Length: 158
Image 1 (cartoon, rainbow, N blue to C red):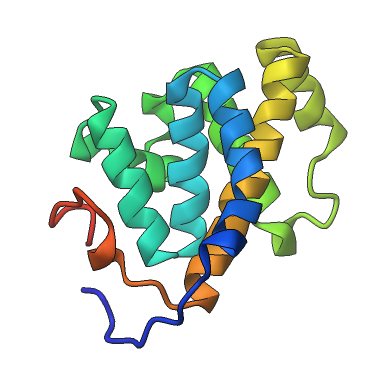
Image 2 (image 1 turned 90 degrees about the horizontal axis):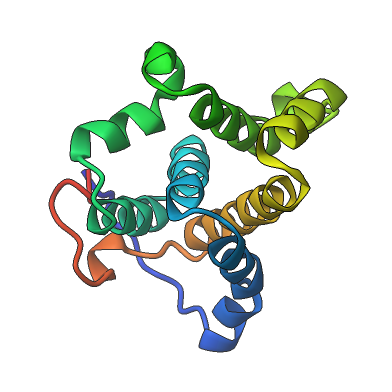
């Protein structure tokens, strides 16, 4: 259920300032990789407007609702993800949950990412996850209403 709140207006020029990392991620990554990172980071942060956006985008890319929910809670379903998918989800967790990992991105995870994904994809994922986290924080701080997002379904709003 979406809590009742009064949205604070975000001028488009502010929203646009945060767009380049997301565009970079879209240009450099397989869309599935970007959706994995965005859906998981947003689930951790709990931004309702970003949850609606990333669920909608993943659905429109062909993901099932069941798969989206598994991505959001991937550690409960870890055996259902490929090694590469799990690595991307682990990167999203590590970069998003700074309280649990003051090192933020340990060398061992960095090296596994480079070995599995390559340098360009690893860097694009990091930039994209940071961008998602920034948008999440904007959505929360400005109390954006997910019901205002185009093409969302009841699932996207849960």
